[in-house]
Amino acid sequence: MATQQPATRPANPRFSSGPCAKPPTFELSKLADAPLGRSHRAAVGKAKLKQAIEGTREVLGIPADYRIGIVPASDTGAVEMALWSLLGERKVEMLAWESFGAGWVTDVVKQLKIDAQAKIADYGQIVDLASVDFANDVVFTWNGTTSGVRVPNGDWIATDRAGLTICDATSAVFAMDLPWDKLDVTTFSWQKVLGGEAAHGIIVLSPRAVARLESYTPAWPLPKIFRLTKGGKLIEGIFTGATINTPSMLAVEDYLFALDWAQSVGGLQGMIARADANAQAVFDFCDANSWIANLAEDDATRSNTSVCLRFTDSRIQDGAAFAKAVAKRLEAENIALDIGAYRDAPAGLRIWCGGTVETSDIQAMLPWLAWAFDAEIAAQAA
Image (cartoon, rainbow, N blue to C red; front, side, top):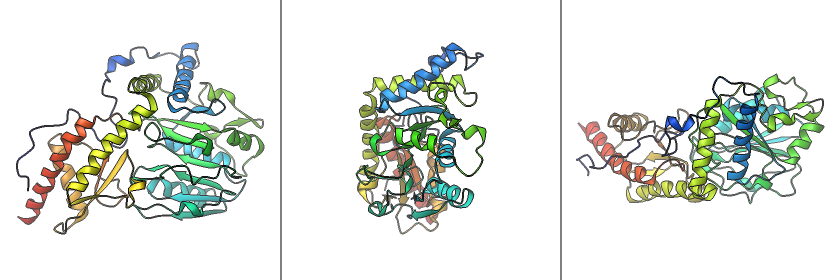
């Protein structure tokens, strides 16, 4: 068992799952061109917002006929906007395998009171995707940020579906290949995989989603902040840079920097490769150490961004206390910050492996994880 502290430390100890590590080349001077103190509706503000929209389209390969809008309140705001604006026209299937997906179930079943069927899997598992009926609208998270479980691909989504697919993809974009032809509404926040500053969400609408918006009016009143249509027509300005409320131009500038950085490392495929390499380093570590394992039970559904781990050693007396103590040791040494499991998730650790993290930092951190485990086992036995 390791007793000595490893000699090498991560250059960057930030492994938080949100907000996530900023790109390795980030420095505040990169944001000097932000039009601070200017109206976001001035020409310069609208140009920056449109640049952010088109940069998103370019990096992610979003089809030209899909609308992309910057909306308030992070991914949560974008998801809520979709649920309140689009659902109710037909039955809904809610798929959940972690806390955020379960939160969307609460919104639809208890708040909107829509005719809905909830399919919920335990942490570490995923629902039976083959059972989904695409005559219904379907709401799901692509990647479970708090469970480390993701859908393996988009093959299970019907091409000839009658309902809409609404996908919370906030910890999947820029790290996983999303089949845009299978997704009618996709939401995310740039504070996740690109490490942007918080409070802004992105909503991506397919032509089918736009057609629903323009042909269907929900039975409930819509707050102004959720309204995507006016007079039965899409508010096009939202998708060209005229945001619903005032955005932070500093945060927008930060996102533009992150998009440029993503292009510099090979665009989407480069970002996916970086996340895959980071996650594989953690997977290999788990394979080499019997006391720790991936929370995802099926290798095909393991996340390459929010990698969730559980301790499996029989000597551990209190799993939650043990995991917190290990995370605390690593934070005290400035080795790994914010890697405790999400509060609603099973006890363990959550290591962010998205593309803004350097593989060398993951590799330097893991021996310290072994050291912290040994130290805590020894402390427990004392």
